[in-house]
Length: 421
Image (cartoon, rainbow, N blue to C red):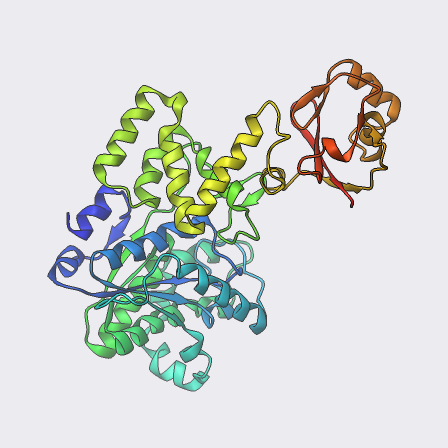
């Protein structure tokens, strides 16, 4: 299957310029996607464009990941109802470094013939003086042309309007396309569907300044069937950085995908072939309770982002949630599962501590008497085992790995007790 047809089958094409299919089929081309350094990590909402670059390289084309160290100082108004807060140069540089490392997990920089590249548009935008920018770029765009762009029109209709700073963003991105054409013969720019106006501006500028034909391809903005923005959860965004979203929580995010979304996400975010995805689609239709497609999705994406070892650790840790007794679990697995649970460090005397006292000390219950009452009614669990003896005493020997206890009140109210040595 040619690349354009594969992208169509994977439902990854929202719109594209005329002749793009033929350009991709005619031979290797160079394409780029820009990534806005608003944070030190990409999140799962950025995975679709990242996968588009990776698929492009696997099909023999040359991908460029552009990190907007220059445009990030301005802020893209596309899809935004309010102006962004400007970041410092130091913040942008730190964010650029984090994003560059994450892109390296998906792109091959040593591939013979079509190695990937990562560039930073600060290299050419920051040194450019205002007069040169106005003469060389600004004169090629009328204000009427810029006002007609959807991202600008939407902001003009808002209460806050749009500043001259963000109004100029379109010109900066257009100039990026010309620079990448000059340096790498890049003729294709890709991005989310909200980038169509910026991309076509770059195509126009390339034609005017270089007499060259450029192409654009925009990807759909991913939402869930339930209408929720993809990647947003009650706990916040799902990041690719394991320091911001643990690999276990990352794995669980994909494992919890709705049956109505899972086949589409398999197409978007994995390299599984058509036959494998079709088999998983049948499995979901016939036995949804087995969640085979969700498990395949979670394994594939977690392996891509964090590596195979974290897939195994996440699956092993997941067993902690359902085990009747987790006393034999590793401390590392338990902490991975309960990373969001409150915790308290306690020093235990040699004879141990009464469980009721421990429950009150860590404030899982308001008082020792309430702890006694709850223990009698069977509402307390220690390491997933129901505790019913109000006189029970816990020692270091009872702790998981001699280091911690998992206390639970009811079904979901957890507290981790770390034993101080």
